[in-house]
Image 1 (cartoon, rainbow, N blue to C red):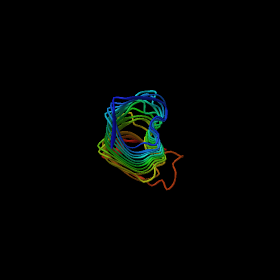
Image 2: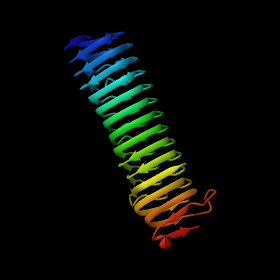
Image 3: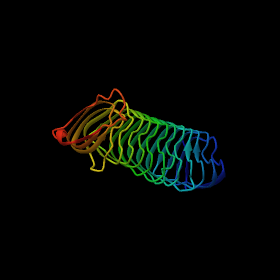
Image 4: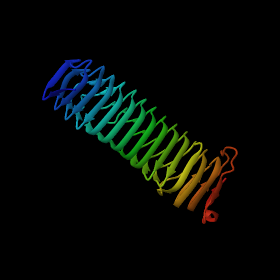
Length: 289
């Protein structure tokens, strides 16, 4: 493998078509598509300024690198990537990719990042700001996630997340086959129109959570006091620890909680309208009809 050290590249496609190449302490400056149509590439302790630097790259390592704000849309249409100990300050990363592994990566502008990607494995991932990370992606495994980006994990399939703290809005919309464990999710309108979402040992916060859901499973979870109008038009099986402020018009299933404030069942409930709701304090709950 050829090694290039302590160099600066800029302009249009300076390393186009390279193979079996290692870059160490290299700067990619102004210009476009510096490392395009390449394979078997290692970039270590490098800094990226220019646009679209890593497109159509197959089999590559990115380690201890920094992508500045100008390096937007940096890695698209590529596969078999390992990224470690890297900081990303540019938006629209990772599009149409397969087989990504990320360890200790911080993305400070997560706007439109991880779109239409498949087979993602991440450990200790941070997402900051931006909208719609992971749109239309599938086969995602994440252990250790901190995110304050909006609208995360929409239209995703086959997702497993453990040990996460997600502060967001409208997350997990129209997702299918999702399991989240040992996590905190804080945001309104969680998992609307989803299928087969399972939440285990989680704490949930926000208004109007978990509505219009099919095959929803809640195991050993707690809810913030502000959570209300939950489970509307949902097929839900829920085992809830602690208090639930308000449940509204669940369609079917079984909900059990330590205590429930109010249950709203009104003329708008959908058939089969047979959800069983149980609690030691259910008798004192206000049933509105």
